[in-house]
Image (cartoon, rainbow, N blue to C red):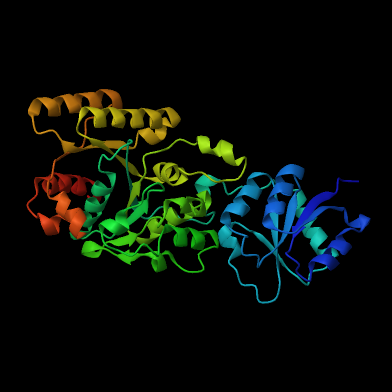
Length: 394
């Protein structure tokens, strides 16, 4: 006799659960019911500890989202959604491939369970959170940099505005999980934001990403960042990657402003739960087509930029190969400019692609909430930036 199929359930008190559990306990069906879980916390704990083969979950549970599905599948647990009358959630968009009606008998369900028991569990791991995602339809540029304030947000915002001015369809995303500021810089509302987008992505996009976007300068679309830094746990890994996928579909050019930190030591504090403060940065660097490493053009800024690059290269050399260096607040003196370029070339393997000079008009940009072109249209900083815009959009 074959080993019984190990199963857990989580229905939140649904009327179908008790009769189904009683039916599945018949020995001839070959099903071992390990536990009836009362909520998703118990479900996750039991699944990771007891390693069932299948989890039967009420399809209408609001906590049944992309990240929970992915975590269970990563640990070899296949999910079967039990649909009651009126349930219309897009379960396939969050990775649930198997669904049955609540009226199904124990015998009918046991046949499916045995079929699943002979299959290899499918994972929708972190780099493929949307198992039905199409090939990228646009170019994604991550604007990143070392610790301090080298000008990441400044470069990201002005790059998006200038690219849109040139006719490109641009989506500017604030992916800084530590100190989001694009909404304030452009005088936009702090909501809707990435938290709403992540929630919609986790639930399978019952509303589109467009409902989370705001209109920025020159026709840019803007996805604002976290209204408060402590909201970062609301953006989970697979949901964030699904947001990036949707952003690619929404506009031809996606520019994402990121925080500096890429360390993942905080995983130790949360055991197996997929909470990571820096996941927005790390996931975006992985998904991006190009990474602009913004470095402040002074000795401290150059050193911080080099350290950031080396940290990224040690973590993943393939990602580091996508890096192009942009020097912001570049020194005016030729000798210092040469020294800055030489150091960056030596440690990153390529010369900077742009040297953006100091621009005093940024003081007005911040206070007035307007793009640099509206404040200083003949700025040398803009002339240098537009050379980079042509490369990215050409």
